[in-house]
Length: 245
Image (cartoon, rainbow, N blue to C red; front, side, top):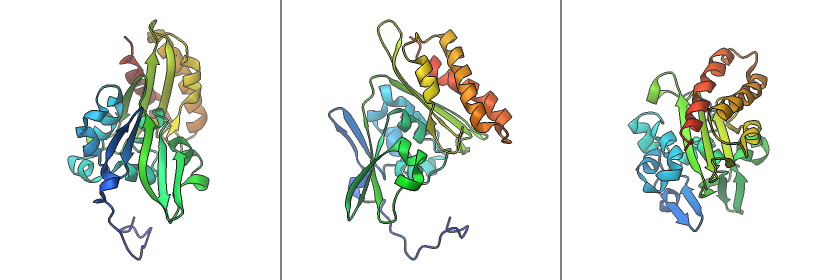
């Protein structure tokens, strides 16, 4: 942004070496990721194996190794791109952002940060210090479709968190998309439709129809609409098929 003359700051402060911003903490039922934790840190951490693998996968697909070594999860969020890879998995985890300033601490739901950015976005006197979420009961998955594989800025991404009961029915579900709107968002119509249903190929097909209708309303008339309408099908199937027992 500085090279493009979009911003002209009087000074830059490097916060990347502040220890408290680089920690990944597990506290009882919660996980807190420091805002300066890099994508590579998340990929290498055993905390994100198992049920949280979808977040690890999203970070693994960010850019090149050099970008993963330098880029941070906090920067990915605050930059505010609708194509931010780490955001859909964090939306599925119902994450909370923790901001700090001389005035104290402020917490904002990640979903609200994008949806109501003008009202609750980061202030000039604040620093994003951490992202916090409850450990999920279900499993988290992620899929991405770009134009040049790993080096692509994500054209479309999708994440899902699904918790199944003993009979294979969905007792909790969260689905989030990137680049299917003005900002990353939860696909609540699809969640409401699938909740309580058995997860199988038939219900995945039915859920896809609900998703198509929702994205049609958002994207109709845009130049990317035909491409995204077809692409979303494979991503939706990918994030849910892996959950079928």
